[in-house]
Structures are given as C-alpha cells and as structure tokens.
Amino acid sequence: MRVDFYQLGASPPEAVIATIAGKVTAIGERLLVVADDEAFLARLDRLLWSQDEGSFLPHALAGGVEDARQPVLLSTSEDAPNLARNLLIADGRWREAALSFERAFYLFAGEATEGARLAWKLLSGRDGVDRRYWAQDDGKWVEKG
Image (cartoon, rainbow, N blue to C red; front, side, top):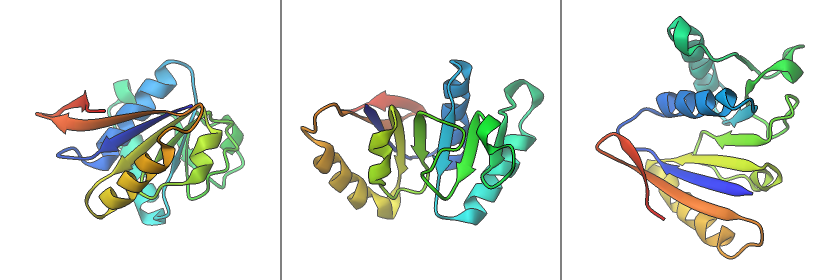
C-alpha cells in the first residue's frame, strides 16, 4: 500500500482535494475523503458542486441512500460504503485505518506537522508500505522523500 504525505503550502486544502479526487476518478477509481470537521466537509461539498462544468466531480456527503454509488464520498468515518480503495485524510489527523486501503493521501499543515512526522516514522520499515512525501515549490508539487 502507498501513503502519500502532502504538506500543504499556498494552495487551500479544498483545491488540493479537488485535484486529487479528479485524478483518482479519472482512472476509474473511488475515493473516500475523511475529516472530523463536518463544517469543513460541507464547504468541500459546496466547492465540488460549484466548480465549472468541465471539472465536475460526482460526489456526496456520507449518510445518504446513494453512498455506495458515489465515486467520491465525504465522511467523518473511515468506513467506505462506496468501496473506495483510496483514502484521503483531509484534516491532518493520521488514522491507522488508512493502512487497509490500497492508497492513502495524507494532507497536513501547521499544527498537524508534528503528527505527520510521527506517522512518517511509525510507517518507516513497515512491510508493504511505500511512503512518499510531497511539498509545494512555486505552486508545483515536488516529491521530497
């Protein structure tokens, strides 16, 4: 399984999430986006609906009758009723449940940096875990480790 650590810089998390979600769905896969903050998920939901038509991402907030059909599901839980094999941790709080997915995207910034360092160390040398660290450099994502 692969874990991509994304240290947020100038780009707002919602924009990074939309980009990653677009790439995941473009290859026919599903994504579960997790955050504890329901207000953040509601803002993300509105942003994904209000993008221009050419970049529309089919998605929903978890808890609806159509959760299983959603390519992108926004949730406070790591359970994936949409059978996503990709997890995006949007709130900077590492979750061990990420290791049950094929790929995890772990976004962090500011106060969450120390937790990200700890998660990086804990995953070091773990069988079957490929870690990658990305940071923004002049607006572009550059792999740092």
